[in-house]
Length: 252
Length: 196
Image 1 (cartoon, each protein chain N blue to C red):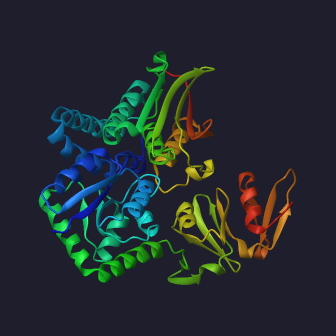
Image 2 (cartoon, each protein chain N blue to C red; image 1 turned 90 degrees about the vertical axis):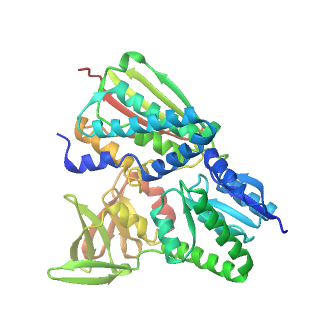
Image 3 (cartoon, each protein chain N blue to C red; image 1 turned 30 degrees about the vertical axis):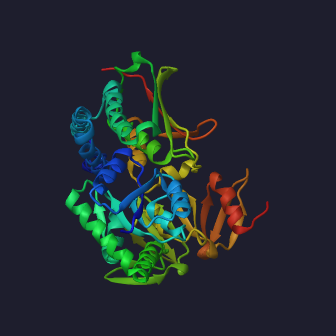
């Protein structure tokens, strides 16, 4: 009988003890450690090289996905989550089993048996895990296009062709080639999805495409204004100046 | 009257992630510590009831707000055991002051989520005192993560923004952030001292 060396990673002690108790009925499973956050999980996986990992997705310091992208050892995995729409979509799309908290003993057993199958499938399991991680990383890919409504049609633009985004009277506008279009995406959401190497939040109400900045004009008392195509101007808020200088290689 | 959008925001204060993790904790407590399971279930019910009641009020007593985060933190402490440490420095004379509802829980929640030190421990200080006839509420963590303060208002979670919006709407005040010394973040609310 081969002993299955098992690691539990969850930030809540009650959750860990729940899992531990649930594993008792499996004679071959031996719990060799418990990690209380993502960083501990990485250390323990690399040093103990468990056969099986029960991994909670939301943990402080580092999430379960981040843990997996930092380890070279590939154990069989049972993913556990209380509620994470994003993670669940990733699992569904990649046909990966996951356990929702709270779970019954029956449901845990199903997941453990599926994990046993992962162990016997070897290569196939590793490939599937890599696909899941690729998907996870891919989701973080930045916005490449933007769709705006122009009268009765929708126009699609390459994101790099946008000059800047700005809020005016509570509405968000896209400025591009002398035209301006209203969109419904709030600025903070745009900021999350735009490549920070190219798009910069110049102040509370504007995000500029750094490649479209034509001039940086000193505006007195250490302030700056960015000149964009069509002589459009966007102020740079004081607290953004150091980050802006760094991105633009500006030494003044 | 509180507007419809704000009502929705208030009702969204209890996050599904918190709810399901708490239920998971209760399941374990039912077996290992039934008395505690009852306490947590009661605290969870109180949290929901308060959130619903608060969504129908423009102001309530500071003592009610403090009691609410007390319950919330009690649940979190049971979930996180010795990893969460909370200190209270409350000037009791200020508890009858009127404040907008649900301004403290999002701040405490933020401190728990992002305020852990390098070992994953969270230490929160809730401080209420008075300065120049204003009530000053400070919620400080000792987290290791450095976040630019301006970014906090635009974060993914709407909690902080919501508090800021409501302070602006009701009192024309902003929610402020300071660096905590030596580490961490401190959210500061200053409101005029007013009783019913």
